[in-house]
Length: 149
Image (cartoon, rainbow, N blue to C red; front, side, top):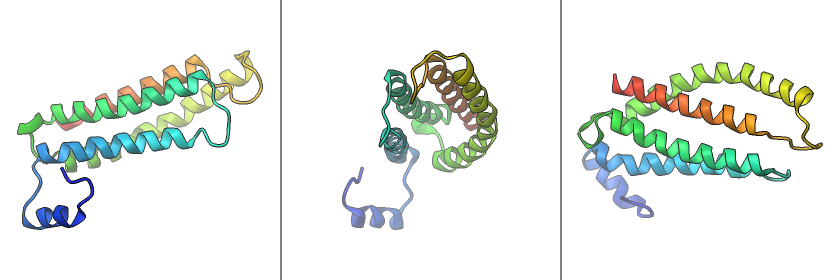
């Protein structure tokens, strides 16, 4: 795996294709670090509560675990075209699930506003973290199912 040497990476890419086995560490690290960056940036400049942190850790873990599971559903080291399947199927599933996230967010916001007894300010609850974690897990399972097909 190339971490810093872009010249050697480009030379390898120009001369041959990466196998799925060689590509999976890049995809796992890319998606995991992207999820981590997305989760960390939301804490600036507002105050977070414990459920924010729990939800963020869960999102990063599920993103990494989901990517590895998708790889295994593609046949693991014997699979083919993982990157093309992962990113194209992931995009379509992401769009579809994004449509569901709108009403879910509305319902959670309504519940939080009218039925939650949290203090003023950020009031992420157990229910928020649970629902969004389930949403992420189901999204990854659907991706894995379609990749396996």
